Length: 493
Ligand SMILES: *[C@@H]1O[C@H](CO)[C@@H](O)[C@H](O)[C@H]1NC(C)=O
Ligand SMILES: *[C@@H]1O[C@H](CO)[C@@H](O)[C@H](O)[C@H]1NC(C)=O
Ligand SMILES: *[C@@H]1O[C@H](CO)[C@@H](O)[C@H](O)[C@H]1NC(C)=O
Ligand SMILES: *[C@@H]1O[C@H](CO)[C@@H](O)[C@H](O)[C@H]1NC(C)=O
Ligand SMILES: *[C@@H]1O[C@H](CO)[C@@H](O)[C@H](O)[C@H]1NC(C)=O
Ligand SMILES: *[C@@H]1O[C@H](CO)[C@@H](O)[C@H](O)[C@H]1NC(C)=O
Image (tube, rainbow, N blue to C red; front, side):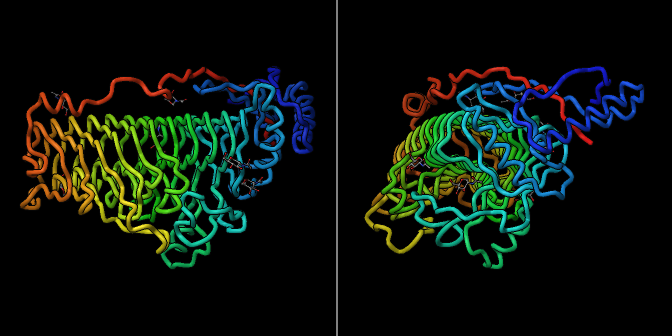
């Protein structure tokens, strides 16, 4: 990586901060030393980094976190450097936007906000380390569609990387890491000592045109990626790792979002790998913002106590048109799970799942109409959810304890369920009755072991007519992805 001292690349960003000036002056001194022929000195002086990456937008301006006084030693707190960098770079929004590069190193930081027309790009050996000091996490209002925080009534700690009311934002890397160091928060949660709801790693609210790609997310205090009240979102190439016993470390939670695709993600966590949401009981019903047009492709999930893909339990604004394909789960509690309750209202409809390979599962399919879990006692007992049109096809599973447990709501059956071309190999210690069904209606075709009477086999023709996976692309599939480059010299001493 070290460049010969005759190379002349420079960072193109304009604001000359004191830290940057010091480094430039130092480099000038080093340059003179280099010029005098002491090559070893100049190798310490700077590193040129250049990358190509794919993104929804490329940027005209470039800076490195070191330009704003950032120090990647794992100990210096960089919150101010990140906040200052975003603040300075936000001025380039109308002028082609800016990208902020985080070089190799361990960058301790508290929460910072993103801005519009902005890319945060992590080197493969860059690690953002979340601060362990709770005062580095300001408290913000609860989400209006939830009415309260999920861990505690009232506010919530802001996410490590937060954005609201933005457009055109990219958080990307070449598999660089964001480490939430969540152990502290998990302990506080278990000891019931939290005053507010735990922070997430990345939350983007009220925004559109968002890309989050090629990152490794470790040990989030709670959920990992939370786009909410947003549209046109690409989440791609994300590796999420957290202990399988860690509380609520959901992977990716699209929440009241339109037009989203989640692709090529590998998730090992303590809660649902992908959880599709849209608000909680009377608050979600009043806010009325569904999650719709969601594609989930090539997801691998390991989560022994939770679902590969969950719909709910907060679904009061509705969930519609979800298409999941090429899903692999190993040692996970369930494949696809619908969770809801009386009082939720809303709907879950037009759900399509094609191509799942499941190994060692408790339930391949699970629907729960009595999930409970209410924000308060003011929910409307007449607000029953509508669950309609749920299609599962081309599924192979082995070592499964129970094929399915499908429980609707008495007086409010879940309808239009179609299960076809499914082969479930049962575990040696499987339950005697592989399917339990109550308050559900639908059909099946070519399913082993044979399903319950409510899903009688109606033959492949009827199933094909009723249960085909949609072939038209979603609007998010037609977004143009550009080849962008980053190239700059960073001054290190
Ligand atoms: C993520 O990385 C993969 C593998 O290097 C690459 O093919 C893909 O284009 C990257 N995605 C984005 C959005 O940059
Ligand atoms: C980040 O955004 C939140 C919510 O709008 C705001 O409360 C907070 O002050 C912002 N932080 C900074 C450093 O600007
Ligand atoms: C952000 O957008 C939401 C929804 O449009 C709006 O209610 C809110 O006032 C906006 N906030 C700011 C700080 O502009
Ligand atoms: C990204 O990093 C994670 C954690 O180190 C690793 O498991 C994964 O294989 C890496 N992915 C790619 C595409 O390099
Ligand atoms: C049944 O599912 C398997 C994958 O599980 C797939 O290869 C096959 O093409 C499907 N058959 C039909 C008729 O769709
Ligand atoms: C089957 O699942 C059980 C747990 O239910 C596990 O202990 C066993 O190792 C699994 N067998 C195989 C072959 O994966």
